Length: 507
Image 1 (tube, rainbow, N blue to C red):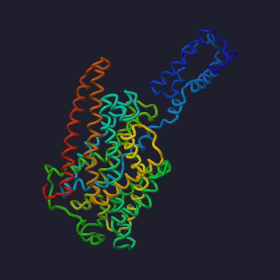
Image 2 (spheres, one colour; image 1 turned 180 degrees about the horizontal axis):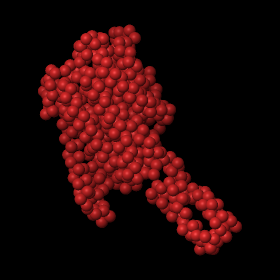
Image 3 (tube, rainbow, N blue to C red; image 1 turned 135 degrees about the horizontal axis):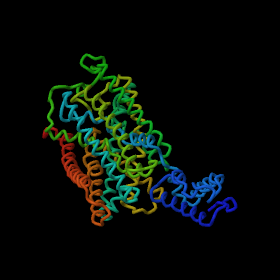
Image 4 (tube, rainbow, N blue to C red; image 1 turned 45 degrees about the vertical axis):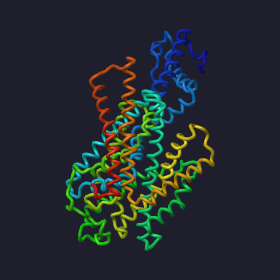
């Protein structure tokens, strides 16, 4: 300990107590992630005594000496961990930034799948809110499990609580989810740039969605996805939140302004298939097509792989503060999702496209601005998404071995080519969003966290570390229900998404 004995006029017993206090602080920081300042502020009892142990004037220098001594004795990774903690408000914004994506542009189409009347927004809002609550709970469950098991990722938590042999399921989900998201991004970019080109007078093949997809892939996506470091693209994801808010405000402005109602100044400039349609098929909540909205909502609320990072990086992290973070992030996301759904569906009804911006006229200047903002956000976020799929691919195939630069670039070419081919064949981004949500979202949100919780609590109950209570029994029942819900939504949701897109007459 870097404290000069000449400055401390006290007994050896008192000095030993200082050492014990410093050791206790280090132990607390290591096991409870307590902030250093908080630990140092708890001065031992002997320092509060009068001059019988130490002259009062020497207490302040001693506290400073102890505070300076503790970081020197901590491992570097623990000191760095404390410095990298983020506040609750910053973490809440980051969570919203992670949750809110292009998927919200598909929600009006999810309602249009089973209704074309305004009253359908009542059950649709209930679906979005209930699934948002379940998603928020499973996000909390993952973070809590990782904290209890002292692991840093969903895959590690699965290995510890369930089994290492079946961890490939999590790796596969980590691969399929971003791959599906990238495919929906490519489809949206094709639609966006095709509309933008037509706005500026481009016609023919150059204005087709296929040409737009190829152009943006070769000119922007591949160069960005090939970058060694994606750190420079991180600020763009922050701007994505504001772009989403601007787009939502625009949708509301056009709805209240009545520009797209029959007789409105933009109504005739929209293709007949995209013009507002209300009251033709009514509402059928028993229709299997309503599962499309369930599947889309799974994608809209899915960022559960990041739950361990949010839990461990939260300043003064605790279950209570983690709950506040989740309430802020998921609450704001649910509110924005409802607004997107309301404004988009109330404007176009049953004609709502898989990406609602497709419904707006190419002569609508506000829509052009929103398309440009959305396209820029998607392009900058695309490399981050594809990087996640590439990392999952290496995790499944290389088993942690070193990945060469050549292999990384070849994997980038392979994945981007596959995604581009999918985007050229499939035209409805809403289908990709719903299918991805039905398969991957159901597993990640409902099944994986619940299985881990049930196995973790079962193990601790058997060992006597945890005792059964009424609340625990109820929570275990909830998790069993969520496993069943995930299985149903996964199987039926995927089937309905395929039938609705390729065999609509069957439904």
